[in-house]
Length: 381
Image (cartoon, rainbow, N blue to C red; front, top):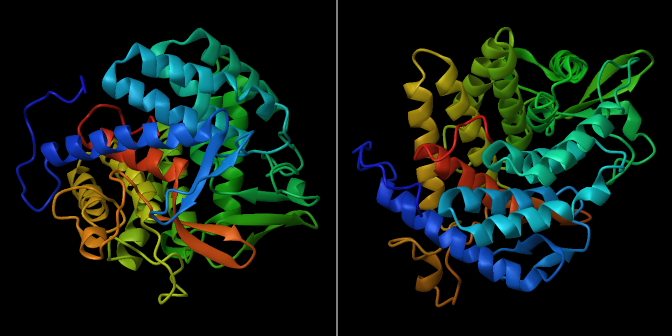
């Protein structure tokens, strides 16, 4: 792995060492080959637990961009021309999603195409990115001053009256890749609308809101859903990097709320259901927000350290397989592949949540590891 050869490193033995991070990345890179062998020309969605039984989608839904993005990231680490060709090939298969009425296109095309342009100057990825920006921006609704969820990919008939926090980071980064200032302005209007509609006291955020009778009504309890709070933190950190205040203050407040409300590194999926499933992936996304915040403030080292602690706990937990001392499955007599991150709490059917291995979960964990060893910048996530 050609980008992991720097020598200087934090020597705190309680945190992941550079060697451990390098080993974890190697396991995940190898894991990608096993997943790819099950996909043929489809996109991997999820596999329950460590079962290695993948649900495959022919079109990728909103997840397809993460499969492409994961290969772009692998190419960034390895420098392999074959990996780069693979990423580019998957990227081109995303073109059918440009016309789908959903803001989830920002997740697909920021991670799936734009990173190919950002890191490699890939011309085909650049063209798809430009087309996706124009298509997504055309969904801007001046009445609600933002881009709604949309009716596609499960948004339903009321999708154009709903807004969600999970796409904020990707939308800001994607639209601000354009040379056209009108798209920058749309992204800022969208961020301001979400901030007004979803922010609550003390840094807690609602995961979305519904527009009715001329105003937004926040959905769900603020700050209770761990991944929703983490998505808000990541989106705010991208807004802060792009525009500064007041987003920087709100990022700090949202991160403080996370640290205050979730002292453990493997938080519950929902704070109001503490005996339910945990959601380690939410900690990964929250860590990425903290790593971004650390780059934006003078005393950011405490946030980098906290993010490092969270990622350390995840890599050394039962939810990541294969590292030395990480032997939960071996002790139980299971034969489990290495490099599996099965810490994504996901609704696999109506009324049923499970912890699964997923393309987007593994992608985000690899991003966090890469940021910790300076292979990529926190903004590229």
